[in-house]
Image 1: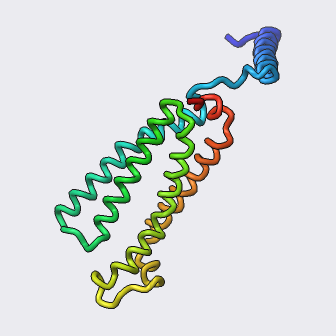
Image 2 (image 1 turned 135 degrees about the vertical axis):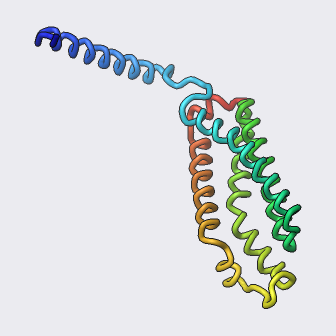
Image 3 (image 1 turned 135 degrees about the horizontal axis):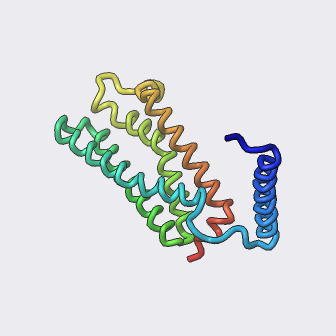
Length: 184
C-alpha cells in the first residue's frame, strides 16, 4: 500500500532534519577542535593495514627468490642482489609497520628510508648490470643496453610503487591525525 503524500513529506522532512543536525554537530566539533582525535582511523588505518599486509607478501617473495636460486643456481650477482634487496625491503616495511603500530614518531624517518630504498631499485639494478655484465654477457652491457634489458613491466611496477609510497610519505608528513597519533 503506497504512503500518502503528507506521510511521504514527513519522512523526507525527518531525514533532511537529521542530516542538517548531523552536519551542524560536525561543524561545531570541527570549530571546537574536538573533531579530530588521535588513533588509527581513516587513511592512517589504511596505511597501517597496507604495511602489515605487505610483510607476509614480501616474505613469500623472498622465499620464492631463494627457491629459484636453489633450483636454477645463481646468475652472477643478480640473484643475490634480488635476495639482498628484498630482505632489506622486508625489514624496512616490518620496522615501519611496528613503529607505526607503537605510535612512534620516528616511523616517519623509517618510512622516508623505505621510500629511498624503493626508489633506488632501478638505479642499483642498472649499476649492477653495467658492472657485472662483463662476467655474464659476451659483449659487456653499456648503460643503454642495461636500460633495454629492464623489462617494461618491471620498470612500470617500480614507478607505481615509488609513486604510491611517495604519496603515503607526503600524507604521513602533513596529516594532523598522524601528528596527533604518533607522539612517542
